[in-house]
Length: 104
Image 1 (cartoon, rainbow, N blue to C red):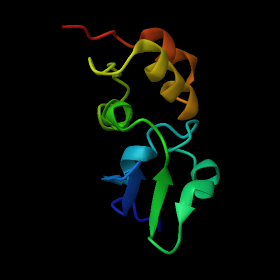
Image 2 (image 1 turned 45 degrees about the vertical axis):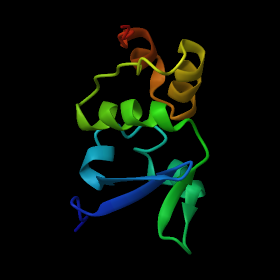
Image 3 (image 1 turned 45 degrees about the horizontal axis):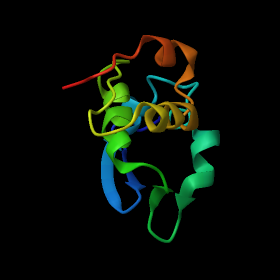
């Protein structure tokens, strides 16, 4: 039996996030949703996944998983940086095409 409530520790450039397997499993064709893709970022000594990526963008990336696919660019993240993060986490063309630009 797969433990869907198993917690995953994700560290993004020094900031730790925690989520559940069932949250990531919603999008199996993405970097975080596919165990075979995300394993290369696992640090067994710290028992966490480490990503040397843009921290402010990751709030929105994780929210994408938590919300079932809603994606909003944080106001403090430039468009080009956020686009690169979407590509890195392999959210796909649908996410790229449908995300809403948040502005002040």
